[in-house]
Image (cartoon, rainbow, N blue to C red):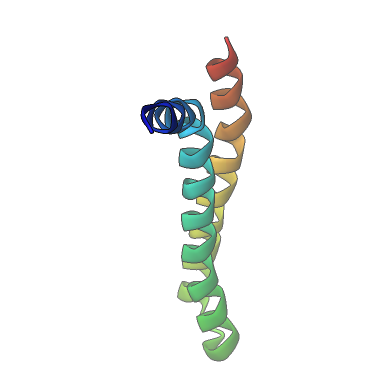
Length: 74
């Protein structure tokens, strides 16, 4: 049983960075959905700007991904 705990701990450390990056991308993507849907119903320019702002966060997180993963391998 101790071997399982050791293996689980090693996996948790090994994949911590990838999970963090994926979680950030997912969170930013989901935060973009609501302003975009709201804009479809209201056609409000302020809501559109909010959607573009949150979409920029998705792009920022995607740009960070290869850099973080590259640093992890080094």
